[in-house]
Image (cartoon, rainbow, N blue to C red; front, side, top):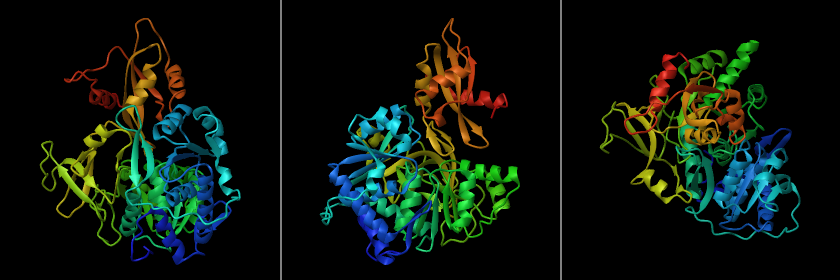
Length: 506
């Protein structure tokens, strides 16, 4: 990683280090626009002036709601410049979901792209929505911005992600997290100023915003941003920009494979040095097919928004990983694998994974009890089961958490169940994950109707689509006379999953 010998203590200082080393080097490429590091720094300063003009300052919270575009990175670094707190918002959320994110975070303003302006207007009160395009307009105040005393422990990001309850979790990350994680990831993958990172992941999530884009910039490299993922656009960008680093979820790689196999196409990806797959388990078949067609291996990577990086392939360790291993411990990781009684597992023994990574959250916003239950001492409870072999290779063997991961996006079954249960014909409902070749998992709804009521699967799907993002809406509905109850009195979802398997529907 190209950086000063003195590690940056804040996110803006980390970008300053990259810009000072090679100011004329391309920093961001988006369509026909290329921003050098010097130009990027100038735009960040302009954006910071705009934010101050909107009344934002140190400790202020603001959100941005948009498909991928450079202005989201301007918001990220300008927030760091003035000591504000940034809330990126997934552009696929519904008005109700945007409203919840905006209100719960305490955001003062929502900056939005024109493509989602109608949703923003419905979700956020008048006068608190500002077009993102304003950030490129000249600022009347050209005086130097005042120096703000931003500390490593100051809040910087609030990231929303689905949890095991119906309410999204709001994860608070500080400057220390967003400077330490890029250093650890750059060391893990051997990233530097010569790397070109392609970003097709949504910048509304930490994986795209930080792990891909910010890590590329804070390593001094070039970041190519696509507005959204499409297999053709990504494959063509690999070649056009001579990309060396790419991050994706299994669904992306499956879609690239399907796109090429259906058309008998191939692309030379020999220059791609690091091809990272995270967000959901990577099927061995997908990995083998991808390598055979493109001549590039997919690397497993494991992390969470709450704590990152955790496991992956180390650039300085050329030894191949054993079959099924997700990787070695990331630089700076503290990890334990424990039994239910809290004692440490022996090598090869399965237990719950507890970690403290280079970037570990301060906690969940406005949820002290949830935060306390998420930690054992200073270690974060991942909710995942795994084991470690004698050589330090880690294997993920299962999930404690009741989360469905569709194409790398988390779906809370409770949130989907709540939406379906609001239909007047529904008496009871349970949502479980079903394995899917393309998306990894998809939600399937088991529904018990009220006596004398009738409703079709299509009507339930339409009902759910009115309140849920499209990726959360089940496409399959199985109507039951009753749902199995476990010993604790709760619906036995494991039994429902077995029922799907027995019926050959997995």
